[in-house]
Length: 465
Image 1 (tube, rainbow, N blue to C red):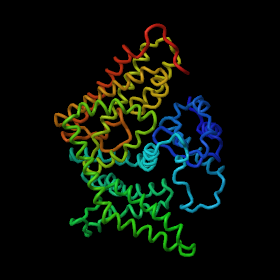
Image 2 (cartoon, one colour):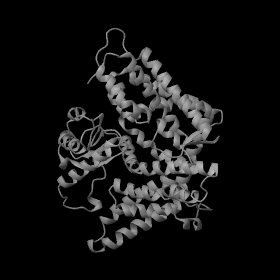
Image 3 (tube, one colour):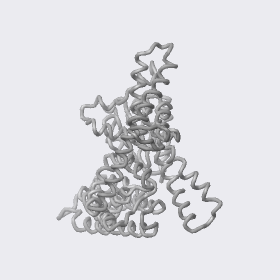
Image 4 (cartoon, helix red, strand yellow):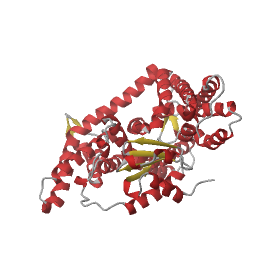
């Protein structure tokens, strides 16, 4: 029976130190992400014991509470509303006075991990639009290939491609918001990247191309705008702040973007695409093995979102990301491992019930319920699940070495849910067949490895509740 979102939100807020301790609340596909003023006030064990909570990742001031798809949207809305109502009004709400990163105050945090988390916070809110537009793009492609509904395809093309054409603006807006600047100014500077007028600008002896540098250029441009805004706001008289601060914030980073960032970010983006293609063409099986095998640990700690800029860059350049189908194999290994646990532990009614309830989500690419509810508590099945993901990734990567690439036109779904988004250089049918073969390989190896090696010899110790 599904838990009431309002009751779940109330319980979560109580266990994280109350509404006043929550400075931000957001969510991705499965996780409620909270930023806490005082992480020590939160009760991690209490959160894990809540009905409906599938796992907790405590990472300094950022706490990720795994609730699963669907329910996370409703609980986040409840939590955000109550946290906003219970939050003290700050003395100064100016962007220059907001903390850019409370995680810097935590001794156990590394700069790299903090940066990855913050970049993920920029891109995670964009995932729903990427999924929706990606699916529409796939449907439109089918209509174009079959010649059906020719009057509708131009409209679908415009709807499906509009967001990606302007994604730099959204990245700029979210970057400024995440790093303590004025969001609309970040979006204004990032809009320079995609404006058609940049074609008339010459930098380093060549004309710029609208969109050159893509999301990477937009990210850096908005970050620079935030730094400039803070510097200016702290130095101009209050009477001139409303005029000078936004003007300088748009002008200086805008010029730097045109005469430096777009060229440099474009070179980096091109290098990413070239490196991905070279890696799959020369060592696809090995690359797939490593990516498929290591992705579950990234999901476990929530760092998989840091790959979103790479996926987005590849989609902008090539029309699809070749990395997502490889990474999706990790979920196949997880499903195979869970099935082996279900078969081996016939008398563990509670665990088998958990598997039955979590397996549909796992087949659709949502791995957290199986990770936190099954494989991770048991230990060895988590490792054998990674082995299954590695085998599936190697399968898909092997075909890339032979010249057949499998890609996804958008990011977000995986498992069976990724089929509507599949494409490749040999056509949709070939891409779907190879991807299906990778899933079956992941299922089979994950199941076999777990069945044979996923349990210690001798009497079994019951899994944690």
